[in-house]
Image (cartoon, rainbow, N blue to C red; front, side, top):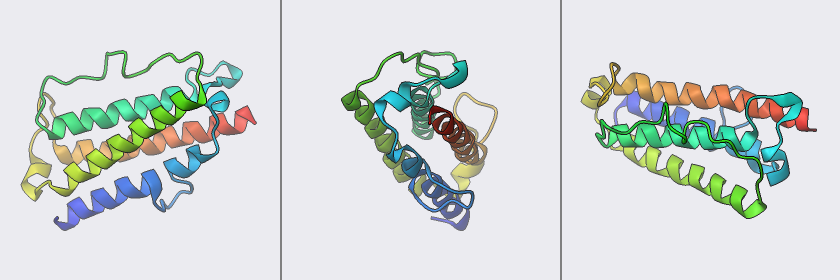
Length: 156
């Protein structure tokens, strides 16, 4: 793994379950969230925590598919992008968090195998390269971590 790929890998890992510079990682942020809190939509916000987690998972799968070379895979205008979840049991919530973990594991395994040349290569079906996409998924996660943190505070 070259230095840039190591940096990207390290940032992905830090945001998910490591020690990011800004505060809590995703796993820690979700650790004390029950299914009832996860499905809550305080102050009529657009999305609940569970919907945001499913959205994060969907975009992880998008990146995984693009690394695998799947030009046809899309998430932007599909039901996967923003699911509407009105009720949630604890087993369902655990399964959703397990899906997120599985996506994280697969993503890191794929990133670990990338070459320096691949970083500059265009993403199948897109007008940007893998470098931008991989940096973007880190930024995407951080953005949504802020939303999850706010929803937790509003949910009490």
